[in-house]
Image (cartoon, rainbow, N blue to C red; front, side):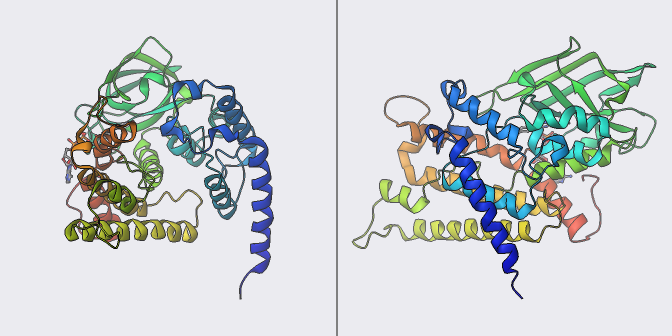
Length: 402
Ligand SMILES: Cc1cc2nc3c(=O)[nH]c(=O)nc-3n(C[C@H](O)[C@H](O)[C@H](O)COP(=O)(O)OP(=O)(O)OC[C@H]3O[C@@H](n4cnc5c(N)ncnc54)[C@H](O)[C@@H]3O)c2cc1C
């Protein structure tokens, strides 16, 4: 039987969310989204006010527990909040760094009460920025080969080594880092997860330029950096388990198919602007038309699968092995859209700078380039396939990646 009571409660919440957003989201920021924000907008009083309001309400982290400042909403209400924000072009201003998407959820899963009290409220209010220090020059897909060492110095840890591809390290206050604490153990054992303060002389970050022009990630050099004894997240030498959990949270946050320079305008509308159409307004090139429709069907199927997965998820955060399937599917949709967009734009899709191209065309090209990283970060597409084969399909284990 239908649960009309639940529906009515949700509609009550919708009204509450709508009223709160009306009172607190500055109309001047509507439709901007984090990607479109300029420095001037980020420094504006409207942006600061929005950040403060949503942080204090806990609605930037709507399902997190209220005792740490989160919104405490059940998943269904959190979805209504997302719908209401989308309806008025509002966005979450605290989705910078990796606090909300990865570190916070992992601290909630594995942290001590003291760690939750210390770190979660500051993430909820957007007061600190976090990065994730996993990859090393010789440990990417084979992450368990990592060599950064943390040595017990009695009342603290001393850390030495090098991380690489550390997104946002140059702007971060804290790092969730995987370190080797027992070099004599098997490689998946002897690893620990540490919460490391980035503001210390032992940590140096050197930004690396990405193909799309920006330098949003770094080589991170760690020389006699220190961390207190209670910096361990989870138990000593079981950091691999904690680390895998963070990766599930990471993948769960990468299932939206929004990367790859995708425009929000439907592709067939972009196409009508750039390529020939017949008397009925249809794209003349039948091959392009077919591929475009196939892509739109894939995108729709992915979006519906996401909604179904969210509705079926017992956990609010969706951090399961299924996130690997959704991450690969999101990557496929986003990268295909970017490729098709460039093809449709023809010569206008080849611009890097200059007056011959409008701003949207230049952003599309850079987005197409930065979207290449989607099938690499968070574990490459091939590594996701290994996880799907091993952990979901139960096929024989032929690799050590997990
Ligand atoms: C934009 C961006 C941001 C990133 N941010 C971070 C970050 O914040 N923190 C962090 O720690 N890391 C970060 N990374 C690193 C990322 O996690 C690694 O690049 C990724 O895990 C792949 O590792 P690798 O680059 O060493 O490639 P490799 O592991 O050397 O892989 C090279 C190729 O071999 C394939 N391959 C490797 N092993 C297997 C296997 N067993 N089966 C099949 N194919 C295999 C891979 O799929 C890939 O195509 C980021 C990467 C990018 C591109």
